[in-house]
Image (cartoon, rainbow, N blue to C red; front, side, top):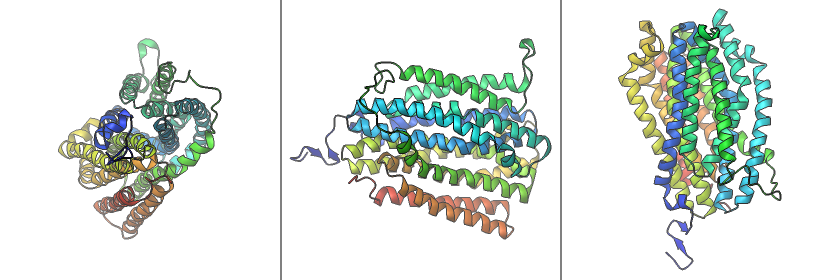
Length: 461
């Protein structure tokens, strides 16, 4: 320690989270969050497996509806990430009164935002589904699924916001418990709503029942989350708010959210673009295969958000404490841990590919099995690289730097889109499309790692 009372990593702090160091802090908070978020994606897989009992058409409808529903989910996720960063910085600066007041106002803002987004995204559902080119029963079921999912944005948004406050307070296990419990309820409701329950007079809804189950289970999760945050001994208690703190909420959160929204929209648009190109050039079997593989990809990408959120919380505190090197290391370790966690999933997919397809579709065609194996062998590794980029970005968000990672993503995804369209224009094979995805995601990962390691985001001047 030097004469100014600083360690080699920056000023000495009493913050328990910072004393763990970047590797351990990201791992201890990120791993439970990764498991919790992966469990959420896993429930989506179980949904698809149950839906698969209704046939290939149902799988197509669920894939299309859930893919478009990802767009409003982007906004909710980005606002909650912005809240995580801002609350973490206030806690790092020992401004607990301001943090609690900000949290209360942010929770109410998310309720109203969810109501507006629910209505605005439900209205164009038919146009969105028609854009994919499906017709008949698949079209009708996809629209029903999408409308229900979009109208349920309120519960989804509030659950994201409340668990973001918990993560800012350094909690990892309560968000995990909430996500697991919500998902168990979701699973139970799936069976009831998809297939009906004659003894209780509940009719079978079909594929849209999965969307109803998700909305209902998230609503119960919201009730539990709000009760948890209303405890008076919680660091960010909603009941211990001082009236003299009234920092603006809406504009700061939206200002920090829109660059993130652009980034996640780029990722969602890649999936939509790939779906459209594959459907038009390779037919229904290829789309059914994508419906399975992209759901499995969600385990990789959702879990990476756990490590990214941990890096956000740690880097926000580290920057506030002047520990700039540790803030950078948090981003690097989050990238590594995200990719290792994702690689474990992909290894399992490669090993059990055909069994996974049969889990979703009891009697799949040989073509669907073949196309799924091709995806796992090539494109899935691109998603692992994307997971590493998301993990790294988390640290940059913690310092409040939102524009720089967005610009890096725009450049990287421009390469990805260009590669996909070049393959499409030249009539490339399906593996060619998947290699184009891997090349593009490699560029995205490299750019974000360079930003974390060399950018000036960690020094708040």
